[in-house]
Length: 301
Image (cartoon, rainbow, N blue to C red; front, side, top):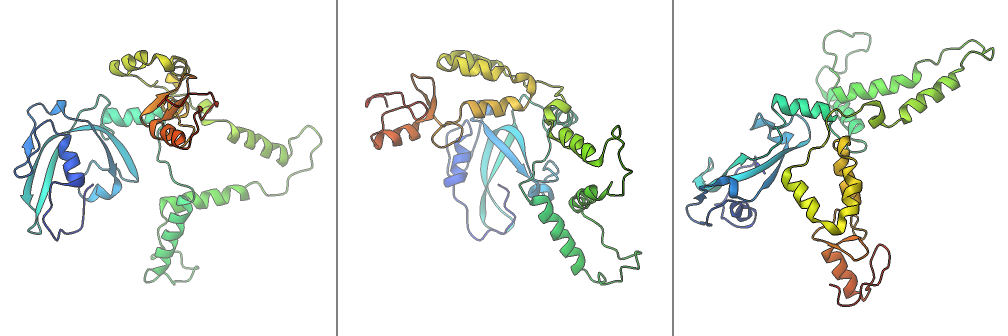
């Protein structure tokens, strides 16, 4: 969390600051900070970079948010910041088997896996409208449309995409010759286009790189005997790359909260439920499995 605003008070080693310091493999020190002798022994921190940090770090993504991997806290220390107030600094070092996403190897892997920026619904259209409004608000934007010379606002990439999508349905609207039965009518062509677009992307573009499990992950999966059937089914999707993770999330989703099970409890009927969700169900005097209504008994949790 890289703050841009100016500080107005001294920071203390509490809340998020303390939580991050506890990940360092060194005794906590509220006064002078600490440095780990074996930084790899610290607790892992998953780092997600935002494009807002682009003004500070060249490693930040150009757009949106990006998962950068697992980091470890090497050291933390207090110092006086630019505003004259005490701030806590942290040195994190990457400790991940996968290549960093900004390296040539990482960029190649992103391309092989077919990863792309995922926009929320309506985001592209909203950004295009915003760019259009900003262009109209610029000085000199009231020029006549007959003068397409200098001063014409430059289109944002997202706006270009929207305009291209708007032009596509207009193409091919000219009068077509009457069909003699052997020719394909525009309706038939439209049906073919719909069939092509309805085809899943996974079939059109086969993943070149399968998802690889680490030795530790493989060992933990083998130890999870109650979920052997679920893991066997999920492991069949390793060849699908990122789709393997989606399959795991779907397989181990809690039926109560519809999220990936947190502190999961595997019932005798081989269903996975969050510990807190099952405890909440038992407090309501419902002693059956939330998925199949198998009787678990009052003393199960």
